[in-house]
Length: 248
Length: 351
Image 1 (tube, helix red, strand yellow):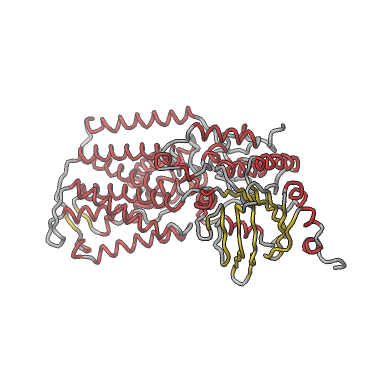
Image 2 (cartoon, rainbow over the protein chains, first blue to last red):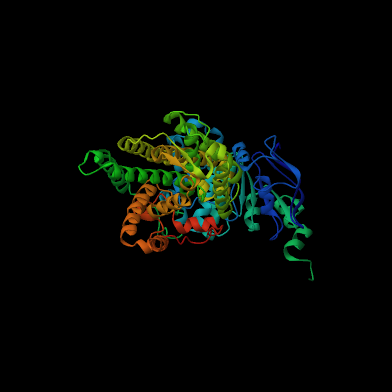
């Protein structure tokens, strides 16, 4: 499979702490990959490095054939890499519709479009995604007035608005009502079936095992294991990282 | 399929009442017509027109401050520096006095070049400082303001130093009034139009969540420096007009901290991040100050301080915010300014 995302030897340090320590990770076109690991294993920091929210101390990241190691986040987004955040980032004082309509693919926004109003095609796409994410009836509400789960869905919708090639989802089910988790899983399957590759950070290991083709496990900033969900769940090193050594 | 909701939206949801907004537009047009016929009314002399022109200048400065402070969330404590730069550039280009460079340009090109100089310097300063957040940015701009004023004071060969510069007098008050009225009306219309564009919405996105905006493809640096530069240009333009009307500039009257404070207070009183807010707030503040000055001479500054507290406590979205929810509140701006944004899973506590 062609690697859409190919990160090699990624290192990120905060003072004396090495949060990500020489991690290699790749995602193929149309693939759905899970990234799991105990708290503090460096998953979110790795996401920040991949989306260039954080700089890299060493290593390289290529996306769709382009070296993005020194790109700014907006340049990465314009290449087709969209992400969500562990702590949800939506524009709280804007309406749900405005949030969606602002999350277009900005690579296509020229000067005329920048100083123009939202076009009907963007409105239709936003409306259709809101329907897909079951948020249609909240379109005119301020994003800050939504519940945590609704905001989580909105953030996924905003990421999808930019028609990404790769979606980085950080804790997509965190804080979401359990009855909604299955619906999010259905939506992600559908998105992936439409050709969008997904790299998913999750605490919910069952959710990852159900959805992903491949799983990467991080522990203390380093890659511990990689394989199919079945292989990874049976890996003694993974079991030890999550539950501690036998007899401890 | 069951809707993905877990309860009704919290209080504070956007009412989205277009009728109220229409009312606001009609009131603005009515006010504009009234202001246009004002010089023709009996009893309105040059002194009144001069006062009204000064009020329009304050409105313009507040509208420009609101572009960066209200829309984009970058609280600029040194905004008056662009006014002073516009005023001084105009004065330097027009003045013929012996302690100046004696260039002797006419007013229109001098005022326009003054605005351009302010805009270019704002772009340069903005590029350097807008990577700073919250109080760091605000203090950097306050420092810029103080530094520029002192540079002007010590550059006597060009600026006339502490003595200042005198401009050729042209005291046609009605003309100045109409020019400023037209420019302010145009500026407000431009702000209204801008707010409806993707550019305007992206500025609000930067205010709401700059990291989020950047990761969604918005070139935040370019947009915020562009709007900062435009605000500098526009305030510089009004600085040039003011210098020409005033016929004299010196560092202490061209670079006045109160001009920034008035812009901040007027915008807060009217409604941060709204189009009409800085206009309504600055006009209200102007007349309130006249009233306090006349009736409470010894206590007028205390009364202004009390007003600021009242705004924060009881009108965090300002006067316009009561009918137009498209702005932000003082409390939200404060939280962002000190870097204490509400956690995403926290319910919003703004009214």
